[in-house]
Length: 213
Image 1 (cartoon, one colour):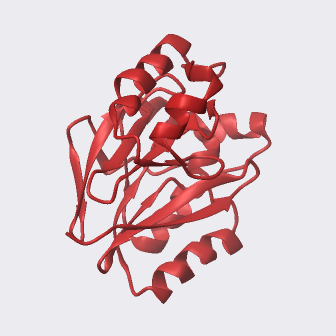
Image 2 (cartoon, one colour; image 1 turned 120 degrees about the horizontal axis):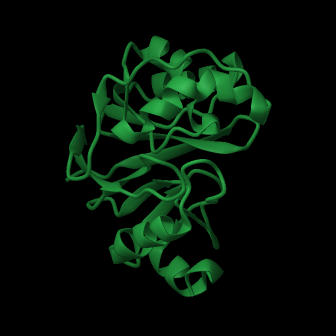
């Protein structure tokens, strides 16, 4: 099996990570933090430079900073986003909520497919599985690549930190259950690509994350 490559783009007012992941000549985009034409073009030009075909647009969750570029990227690649059904109310209400966080955004297109735990995402020779990991946000999901040994975790866990739970729909007990019953069951050597900040490892967070001790 070929390895899946991961390229991160840190965009938007909250320095949120968008990930372009590719295997052979096919790619997926995870989250849409691009907040202007320049940031959108940076993603598109990278994909073009690698001669990639984008097969899926995926959301880890629907907080505003992760969906700012949904409309632009959907138009650019002529694809609809895929997300967990519990994100629907957040996607629909995002333009009204955005000004409270200092953002402006267009209405987000309705996802073309709802994703659930045990669904799979395929592109190139990659086959991802989905973990349902609520707590930080309703409908939060993580994408696991067992062959290439990484998980794209959204805002569930970060290097030495965890996702906040003080926003509407947040639940600390649920977040801890998601981390301990889902993410910490993954191998220690698995890389975590989070929604903010640098990559880390499952094993490092198991030992050194102060919120998990």
